[in-house]
Amino acid sequence: MMKAMEDQVVQEEPGYQDDEESFFQDIDLLQKHGIEPGFLTAFEYSEKRKMVFHISTGSQEFDKLLGGGIESMAITEAFGEFRTGKTQLSHTLCVTAQLPGPSGYTGGKTIFIDTENTFRPDRLRDIADRFNVDHEAVLDNVLYARAYTSEHQMELLDYVAAKFHEEAGIFKLLVQDFCMLTVLRISVPVFFHYIYLPSMITMQIIDSIMALFRVDFSGRGELAERQQKLAQMLSRLQKISEEYNVAVFVTNQMTADPGATMTFQADPKKPIGGHILAHASTTRISLRKGRGELRIAKIYDSPEMPENEATFAITAGGIGDAKE
Ligand code: ATP
Ligand code: MG
Image (cartoon, rainbow, N blue to C red):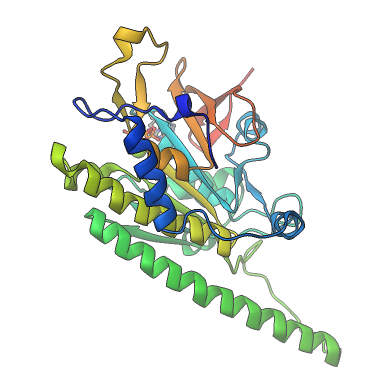
């Protein structure tokens, strides 16, 4: 979770300077909200990590870049300028999260929190067509909420945490029932309406994480308060991802780095959210435009993946591979 200092120097909105002091204050803030939890032995932790699964982005190249897709028990952040595909990727994940994958993943439901009013169920239908799955089943497995303020966004997450708790209970019950049936050797005829029927919430999407914070705490003097609230939200997301083995995917906006021209940086734009978001996100992906429908994803920060790039396409059926 600790990263090199220079990686963490993210310039905020013009006029705001991150310095070493605020860096350590931010770490304190994260710890206060329980982001760095207690100890496990390395063995216990490795046992826990065996449950990690990956959700496909829809593009094999992109998945390869990410070591299989969007990882569970982690927060993955995708940031980029407008039209780079953040919302299209969010929509695609709603569908691919429902498809059975390798290593025992059976498919699951998604919770989608929309802060920019850009969620379109019709896009899910188009994407479902590409994967040959039933529209109704796909739409039924996505729990959607529009957030209007950062406060509201937080309340929705409280609800989500409760929902996870409840679903985990249902799942345990189902497993119990199934065991009893097996013991009694009762065979029950099962008629499938759909190809699959996921029972668990396995994905949590926020598109986008910072938009409402930016509006609600727009004054220069409000930045500290904003980061405090953001830390609280991210701590909640981190707990959801780890306790319930959920893949958390958030999108983020960018801002011009006012110092970039002075230091001749190759990439003058930065994701917003400062150290707080930089620390809480397990994997950060930067997205940029290529020719036509092509987009390039780059690993910006990951605990185990190299800083490679992958090219993908935005198609009618969602995120896909670039045609040769
Ligand atoms: P913003 O920062 O404005 O939210 P974004 O990164 O979320 O941008 P998206 O909305 O994901 O961007 O991507 C927009 C791109 O997706 C556009 O280039 C658009 O042409 C493409 N797109 C949207 N719908 C379709 C579709 N049905 N078929 C093909 N391409 C589409
Ligand atoms: Mg968008």
